[in-house]
Image (cartoon, rainbow, N blue to C red; front, side, top):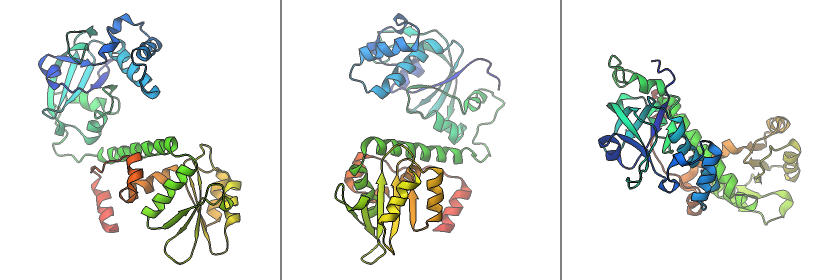
Length: 336
């Protein structure tokens, strides 16, 4: 369905009644005052945001200021709004009916726009992928990937998604959720664990996997960071851990090989990746296994429940169930 130059925006709120009964969409940040009084460019909004919220985390400045700028200046009358209401679990689609209005009479949401609601639909009318996109953690955001699906929902001749079709977006949605979680893990590992701290974390992960792991004293044991055994008997596994951002070179892995005795196995763990030559060396040296950042996050997700409480508090995750394609479910059952 061609919607011309109209954009599709998503929005969240804690006050469903304000949106649905007063025909408004609104966001907070009341301390910012009237956004029309700020010069109409992103840098000016950032400066105002920093002045207004001097203790805000640096990483949230661009996000918060950007949402305010878009709500005030980029949204146009006639643009579409998708609002998932929590009180009745409906997807509400409307059309922006006014320019930006600063309304200080509102208790929490002073940055407002009038809205004309066009349709209120059950969540079951949309694919899992579309629902995932509008489940964004942001208060105000652009809907891109499934924009056509929301616009098509306004066409009375179109059937609801749940009619007879299998949801082909499930696979993509599940993959997106997993990849987002892995991204979070890798960022937290890079931010919170450097050097000896990462060595201790990897040792704890190895214990969760069923290994007996001992961390070497700092600066000792010929560059070997962890020594691990599957049980009381050999083989011995020598582990080297690197928290550097740059890719691991072949010479670095060769140093691990040099510390190994006959019968030992080696494990190299990095948050980054391996150079092409390093990867070739690992392929030709089967007694050493290389784990990169992506591999590490996969292991963390698999053994998360068995990590020590200390590390589960540092990188908090909540177990949830997500839909998967039927063929993937069947494969999992065959593997059990």
